[in-house]
Length: 335
Image (cartoon, rainbow, N blue to C red; front, side, top):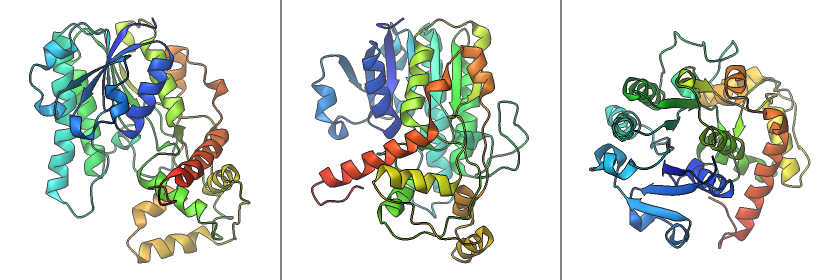
């Protein structure tokens, strides 16, 4: 179904940038909903393959039903993922507005406009904490998100399900999304790896599922490329196969950066104690805990062949790209 028209939000964000590139490569015609023209890269405005619409914040956009009308699919990648710490109730309100309210507003407009497919980039944070003692899959339930971000993503999923009508509405739940230009924790880990300093991670043999932004974009493209029965609507975990330990992750990042591992042995319990002493318990879970994702239901439902995905190769690619971007930046650093 390449060539069909897609209405895409979040095109200037980390995931959105890669979605634009992949969907164009696969022959789709794109309309980009842009929040603020002043912060939109000129390359998007000058690309003749793209139609750009300045909508402002999606949760407040007027005339949205008319804007999405005529498209076959909506891909909703816009949202809020990071805020400065210590925001309290202000953070809760901001996340709910940008993630839950925006998804509900867009889903309602898409349903009323007769859109066939609605693909929402959600998060594993909607159904699991930063570490889990069991394998997480589409049947995982019974846990209430402990962050404003996770709560807003869960509410966004619920809003989409309530508004879907006859749409094939799908929420994808990725774990940490990695890539050379990824923000947040992955950026911090890449910076740490690039420092070349010896790190005390040789003894950390945990298991964590990840997904590269390229692999996620490929899955979205595949979902847009076919017609799916209404029974396929729902929420799906997605991840690359073969989880990696923190030791593996740093080793592969540094391999992509043309470095040796430079890892020292240290009991994980001691590392966790240090994090706890400085108030970084949640970050310790993300580095040292297990979080294994089983996306078998997604693969079987949509017939997606994930056999070409190689998580360790994706990590190396991310490290190599990080170093290239840092070298190309004016001050020699990559932020």
